[in-house]
Image (cartoon, rainbow, N blue to C red; front, side, top):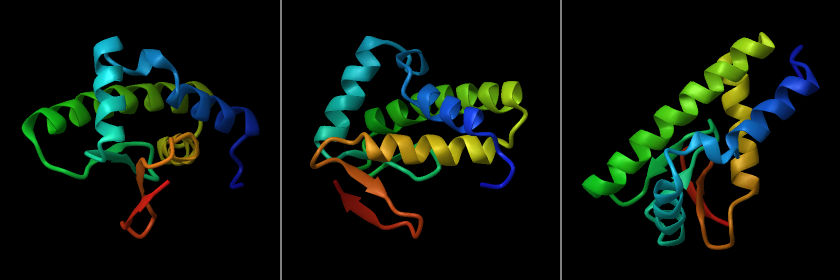
Length: 114
């Protein structure tokens, strides 16, 4: 790893999964449903992507990505690591935790199903 401490990477992965990173229980339920229905998927950079465009899905993804970006920036600053490293680690952790049937995007930009 490129000089990034193990502690910082673990903190980034854990933070990506903290419920506080979501706007609230309703958003978490909406996200779970959108993932289960294949409407959204996780990207390797720690953010969500829309798979099936609908205004309400795009709004949900935008809200959650903004919350994630803010949290990742806090982690990067407090651990003195690049934001991109935190995003990458969070992306890996989120993809690993997907349920069977949910989607993720590869580094090449292709969709795969868990």
